[in-house]
Structures are given as structure tokens and as C-alpha cells.
Length: 119
Image (cartoon, rainbow, N blue to C red; front, side, top):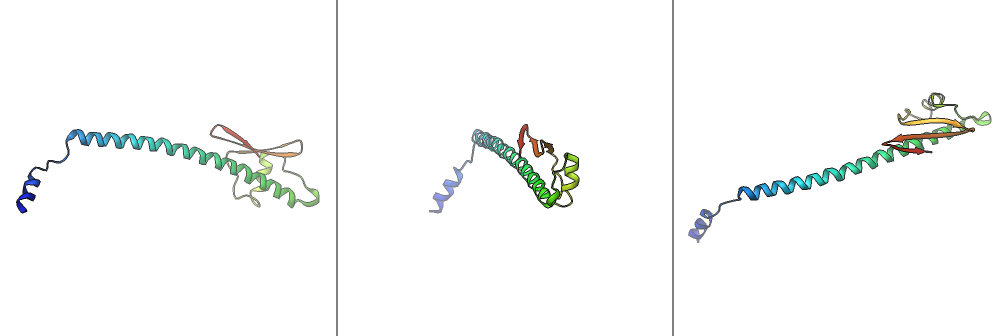
């Protein structure tokens, strides 16, 4: 029995250089596929964050309007909205979001990654 094991160990040669190179090439191809798949997920996350920022500012504008009571009026422009909303209704103003007052109604919009969102 021991002699059989010794003979088997002497004939054990390991992997050839070609086999190791093939494994490395296959792993490289698989990692390349994963990197491109993950980059698409990141783009979707930025788009969702942009949409959420627009909704958050829209909600803050409506909350500000409701808090004004009888003398209700929307903030006039981007700077006025930031001054009115940031201390009370928002922690900070999102960088991509712009605000305008059009025909008496607020328009909140943002452009992220080449796509425009309005709320």
C-alpha cells in the first residue's frame, strides 16, 4: 500500500504553464464582465438620487407654502427658495436642483447624467 502511494506521488507533476495561463485569461474575462455590469448599476443609482432630490425640494416648497397660512406665496426664484427653505425645511440645497416660479406655480428641475427631471 505505501509503495503505491510513493509511486503516485512521484508521478504527480502539477499544472503546465499553458493551463495556468488559460485560467488567468478566463478570470480576466470574467472580471471585465463584472466591472461593466456594476458601472450600469451606479448610473441607475445617480438617476434615482436626482429624482429623489427633485421630489424632496418639491415637498419642501409645498410645506413652506402651507406654513405661510393666509398670506401664502411661493418663493420667487432659486435664491429666495434656498433662503426660505434651507433653515426650516431642508438641511441643505441639492447642487443639481434648480427652482423657478412659472405662472404662479413652482417648477423644480434637475439635470443629472445628461437626463432632466422636473417635479
